[in-house]
Amino acid sequence: MNTDRVSGGVLLLFAAAVGWEAWKLPFGTINAPDSGFFPLSLAVALALLSALIVLATWLSGSRATTPPSWQGGNRVALLVVALVAYVAVLNPLGYLLATALVMLLYLRGLERVRWRVSLTVAVVSVVASDLLFRRLGVPLPAGILPF
Image 1 (cartoon, rainbow, N blue to C red):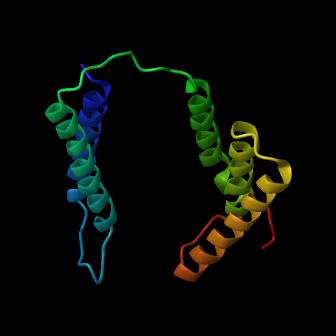
Image 2 (cartoon, rainbow, N blue to C red; image 1 turned 180 degrees about the vertical axis):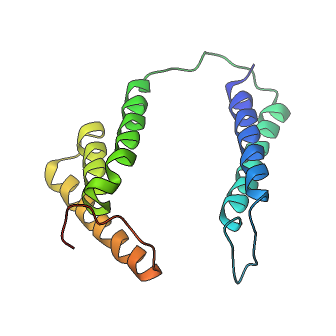
């Protein structure tokens, strides 16, 4: 079977499960969204896009020519481990430090970006996101840093 068809079907099932759970949350309105608005909107978008993938492969009648390659699977596994570690250290270290560290791990460790670029991107994006979240009133873990 075509790998695009399989992945589209799996994503469609995932979108249905997310949509089912998001449906239980209050939706709100476009002008005043509630907690279910964003996850339900994303689930609908994912369902539409994955249905398009399945439909496109079905209409084209394409067949699988080679099995999927697992090259790079170790990088994905390392990133998943890094994100689990990020969740574990987010409260003790705080948003700024934990997020900067996971970004440095990704940029420098996985993508092999130069140190200067990695540090610049990590610091600028973490500070910018922190300022944005503060402006929106989102509480973030302070951690060990005094600010």
